[in-house]
Amino acid sequence: MFEVDVLVNWKMHEKWPAVISFLMSAMVFHVRGAFVGINIGSHVSSLPPASDVVSMLKQYEFTHVRLYNANAQLLKAFANSSTEVMVGITNEEVLTIGKSPSAAVTWVNKNVALHIPATNITAIAVGSEVLTSIPNAGPILIRAMKYLHKALVAANLNLQVKVSTPQSMDVILMSFPPSTATFNSSLNSTIYQLLQFLKNTNSYYMLNVYPYYGYIKGNGIFPLDYALFQPLSVNRQIVDPNTLLHYNNMFDAMLDATYHSIRALNFSGIHIVVTETGWPWAGGANEPYATKQNAEMYVNNLISRVLNGSGPPSEPTKPVNTYVYELFSEDQKPEPLSEKNWGVLSTKGSAIYRLSSLSSRVTGSSVVYCVAKDGADPGKLQNGLNWACGQGGANCSAIQPGQPCFLPDNIINHASYAFNDYYQKMQRNGGTCDFEGTATLTNTNPSHGSCVYTGSGNPNGGNWPSPPTPSLTPGPSSFSNFPSSSSKLEAGAVSLLLVTYAFLSAFFLLLT
Image (cartoon, rainbow, N blue to C red; front, top):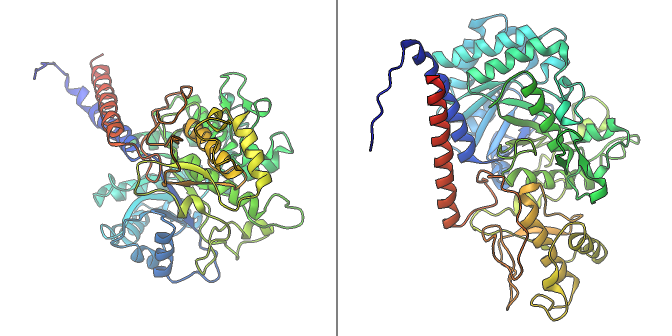
């Protein structure tokens, strides 16, 4: 133990709340890792009873939900559950609350304070894409957020419930290359005030990310695989010419474009939470990419990407909490047809398409493997095997004749080894376990005899040396990448050092 005597002038004390807030933010995001949540829309003609909705969420293991309005029945149904709820304010309500502090107090008392602590409400989403959907609404949006925060302070709920507002990518003029992205200059004043509010209240930037629309609007500039998180060959990878960072998917590029836009306004330390992303599973005759196959591929690859715990290339240590759009298709929405077909479940609770990354993700094991599915198409398996052992960079020496994993000599066995080797090396860089729907995650160890598979909790295992992967220091995921007990101790030590360093840095910054 040692003591340090420091003379601090009185004005310095004014900075301590900001320092503590910054440290708490860093600690919370690091400890919790990344999660995948789900949106529940309000334009559903036959929304199931609230109790059924809660049961469906539990069945598919969603522990975070976003509501577009303060649905009292749903808020009550979530009581005494482990579900974290983001409750929404409609754009119409924003226009009212932004004109009246008392309206904000009434709304918070009725829709938040009344339900806490039974219902675990953790955030308020103020409107939806207000800046790009309601002309000249910027000032009233900022006032509404401030009034709501003051109402939370009065109710002593401001530490538990964060206030933010979801924005679309349209607030950024040019999102590629990410390193040159900036917010639309006509919105700079409003967005500056928004970022200042988020910084002061230790909140986060809510972003709606839609590679589906990015691909459609791109008119063929980017390959479809880039939008769907599918592996890209070396000559098709997207590279930022200024930073030379490689982007394996459009989702990460959109995140980095937003992070760069935030930095361009001289803000840092503000995390991004993706409040909406998804892919439509059906559309009209002029919407050829709205298919179940593409939706299944996007959503499952998205989940694998988010749960690997890393951030985008320019912010690799910032996990990306993400809400899938959406639980049920909103059939009451206007045309085009694709707008009515984003839901991952029917209102009866059955999956619209395969959701293996949700229903079969690992919750009780420290090791995860990527293996070929029984009954998968042999042609697709062969294509995946060829890609993994070639451009994918998997070490396939062990499945050569005479080597430990050659037998049994069949496509399922060989593809499983190659898929797993690729996945274990590349998952932290956005690599997924899909291979055109022929692969799946499992916690059943596929090792046999002298053939040893590397698992996510056993990164140095296997028969053959693997090249080192970049250290991204991802936070622990809620559903995958479970570390072994020794890894947890090492991660804890690293976390403590990082937090200590941040604390001391902030402390000595005050003294200068």
